[in-house]
Amino acid sequence: MSNGESTLPSRPFSLPLYLMIVFGLSWPFMISLAIWNENPTASLVLSSLAMIMVTAGTYICGRWVFRDGFKNMGWTWGKPWHYPASFALALFIFAVPVLIENLSGIHTIPAGLAIWPILGIFIAKLVMTTIPGFGEEFGWRAYMLPRLMKSHGSRKGLLLHGVIWWFWHLPVIVKVGITTSEPGTPVWLTVIVLALITLVPSMMNAVLYAYVYAKSGSLAVVSVYHSMYDEVRDALEVSVGFGPLVSLWEMASTAILGGLVLWKANWKTLPGRE
Image (cartoon, rainbow, N blue to C red; front, side, top):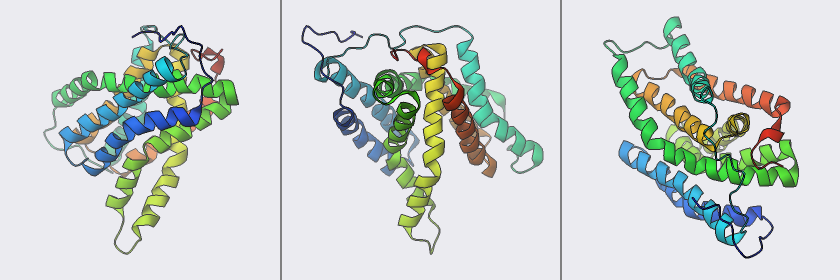
């Protein structure tokens, strides 16, 4: 990809304009995903397109709108240990609660389940979703976040980027609220409650993604982690199945870990931060 340098002078970064362009290109696919998410193929295609459109909008902004290019965005492969460490983090978030559920009898593994189909699902979807994972990380973490940090400082910038990331997922959150609303409970109330419940975990999860990016200094590593996070979850859900502990563990672990790194991490290592 071109670094986006232009002979014309750069313009000051405008968050509202950036979001208008990125959301304008990607949200039609997010809204379509919320409507047609019962179809696995349609879900994969629409979610991938939504993520890729984040990159498309970001490229338009960096190349032609703000003309500030794409230097110092973690264009390295990172260190070899970063990849298994990222995989271990994804396993901690999803595989640990599944193991606890099955050991405690909360949720039992289906009889006759083989490990190879799970690995096959994971590897196949990991390959297919690494590019879409790059699509989000290129926009939210590598391009937008350093600019927010420069304007608002490290912690405020991280929190603002977390709110934006949560809001970008709002169409899917709304759809989940609509489909899970209990009879007798107003749908709008379920949607609002779900949105509020997911706000802090989503923000801290975004911070956790940012930490993987800062710690590795690599856009490749955080893109692979994004795909690992999604596909460890999906492979376990469609094979072993999830009990009630998994979502609670996911929200709690990402909120706690994200809060710790928000407070303790050295964010000056984030590519493009200085």
